[in-house]
Length: 162
Image (cartoon, rainbow, N blue to C red; front, side, top):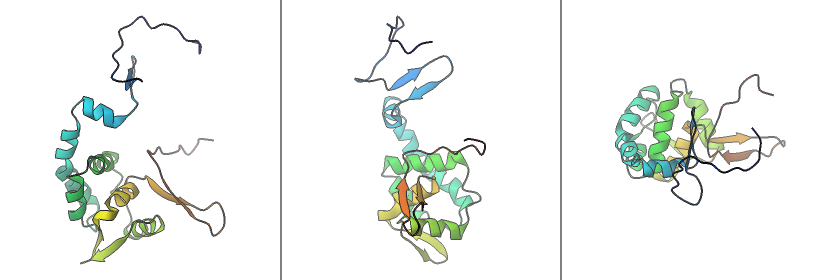
C-alpha cells in the first residue's frame, strides 16, 4: 500500500460531493452519522426509542427526574441520539449522585433538587445529556483557571496508551 492516488475500478455510490460512507471488507466508516440516519431512515426509530431508552437509564439513575429530558428528547433528534448512546454504553449504572451534580456545576449545567431528585430545565437538557454521555468535561492545567469543554465524541484512553 502506498499513499499514491489511483483510479478505483469498483462501483462507487456517492450521496454528495464527498463520501458519506466508506465500506471495506471489515468495516463501515460513517463520515456524518446524521446523514447516515437520514439515508437509512433511522431518525424515526431513534425518536421512537426515547421512552424505552429513558426507562432503561432511569433504572440506573433513580435519583434523576427524567420527565423534562424525555419530553425534550421526544422533539429533538440530537437529544434522542444522546439517550441512545448513553443507554448503549451501559455506563450509567455506577454514576455517583454527588459527582454528577459537581460535574454539572463545573461545566455550566444548572441542576436543582426537587422532591429528592436531580432536575434540569429544558434549557440545560442537552448539557446534562452531554455530561451523562461523557461529552462535557473540565480540566485545570493552569492553577486556578479551570476550562470547560464539549467533545464531539468520546473515546476512552487505554491505560497503557502512551
